[in-house]
Image: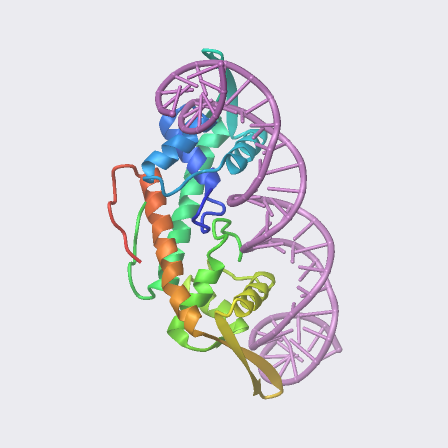
Length: 115
Length: 115
DNA sequence: ATTATATACCTAAGAATATTAGGTAATAAA
DNA sequence: TTTATTACCTAATATTCTTAGGTATATAAT
């Protein structure tokens, strides 16, 4: 990623969630989508993204399919069945994390907060 | 930390914020406070905590003072002047992180969300 | 014509941060 | 007397990231 050094561990969540919504994406597309959605605040570096994609594929959460566009190769990723299950799990973890940080930082406030 | 694998990078923020509220804490106390505030969901491991405290001290954000309680030694940490400044900076980073994750996960929703 | 920017994939070295698994030592409870 | 709690610590390993490269095509700018 970049700049924001809090984001360790959330890259997988981002990838899985985007693929849930978009069905089929290639690496470069993911970096652009995240930049767009966060107004340039989060820039996923390729040195983080590609190893993460390869790991998720190796774990059986993603499958790939190569497409030829003009003379360029695109590697499209999509969720497997277990990948789809993992999305909700990761989102629940993220929500729990945020709620716990709220409890630590604003003790006695914000009883609920949803993604 | 423990269990929740999203929390990479937030330990410093937790430490600094707790010291802002409590003025003076020792390591073990911090682990217990976090466990209490999060109903046992976040357990800070000592292997993460002590190196983090030492690093913050080396960076000049914390100072220490040893106290003898019974026959035991307690090492109290408190914020330095630059440590106090760093608290708001870390909290702003955390808020930005959460807002950006909201934008990615709930595009078009939740325009604001405060800590 | 050439250089820079964008698209599109990738890896390797190093830093940062965490987990796991120890060690030391006192006190208090079973 | 053994276990649990308090209280500090470190070292090996794992994970995840940044930084800094490399390859290659297409397109826009000088």
